[in-house]
Length: 247
Ligand SMILES: NC(=O)c1ccc[n+]([C@@H]2O[C@H](COP(=O)([O-])OP(=O)(O)OC[C@H]3O[C@@H](n4cnc5c(N)ncnc54)[C@H](OP(=O)(O)O)[C@@H]3O)[C@@H](O)[C@H]2O)c1
Image (cartoon, rainbow, N blue to C red; front, side, top):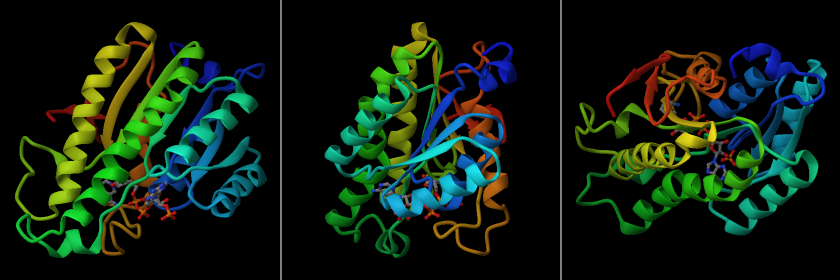
C-alpha cells in the first residue's frame, strides 16, 4: 500500500475491511474510522440488527458499508459470513479481529479458583475465535492484491511485563493471540499480508468500564493505523500507540 490513500479510495475497487464485534465499543469506532478513509467496511456482529445500525450510520455519513452476522464462537456462523463476503465482495483486504470478552468470574477469581468452564469460554472467544475467523477469511485475503490482519490484544497478555496474576483466562487468551499473530505473520510474509496485534490502551467501553481514560475513537487509532500500514510496514509485531513493543 505504497500510495496508501489513493489505493484505499480507488473508485474502481475500494479496499474492503471486516471488523468482528463491530457493533459497539472499540470495534464500532474502528468501523467508523475505516469507513471515513473510504474503505468499504463490513460490520461483523453477533446481532445482525446491531451491526446494521452501525452500517446505516456509516452510509448516512456518506461511507460504504454492509453488515454480516458473525458469532466468533460458531464455526457455522463464521463460515456463512465468509461465504457472504466472498459472494458480495469477492475478496478482502483488511480483517480486524476485535471481538473479545472478559468475564465477571475472571475479573474476581484467581488462577486457582477460576472454574474451567469460564476459562474455556474466554479462550474460545478470544483465541479460538480469532483462529476460526483467520482460517475462514484467509482464502479471501489471499485473493486480494494486498492484505492486513489486525488482532486486537491487550497489555494484560504481555509476557514481558504484565503477567502480574489475576484475570487468568483473559491474560492467557491474549498471550495466545500474540503468539498466533507472530506465527501467522511468518507464514504470510511472502504474500503481501501483514499481520500484527494491537493493544488499544485502556478504553471506556463495557469491558474497559466508564472510568477508563481513553474514548473508543482514541482506542481505535492504533488499530486503524495497523490496518492501513504501507506494504513495507511491520509484520508479526505487537503495536502500542503506533509503536512496536516487545510481546
Ligand atoms: N476496553 C479496553 O480497555 C480494552 C483494553 C485492551 C484490549 N481490549 C480489547 O478490545 C476489544 C474490544 O473490546 P471493547 O473494549 O470494545 O469491549 P466491549 O465494548 O465489551 O465489546 C466487545 C465486543 O465483542 C463482541 N463479542 C463478544 N463475544 C463475541 C462473539 N462470540 N462473537 C462475536 N462478537 C463477540 C461484543 O458483541 P455483543 O454486543 O454481541 O456482546 C462486542 O461487540 C476486545 O478484544 C478487548 O479484549 C479492550
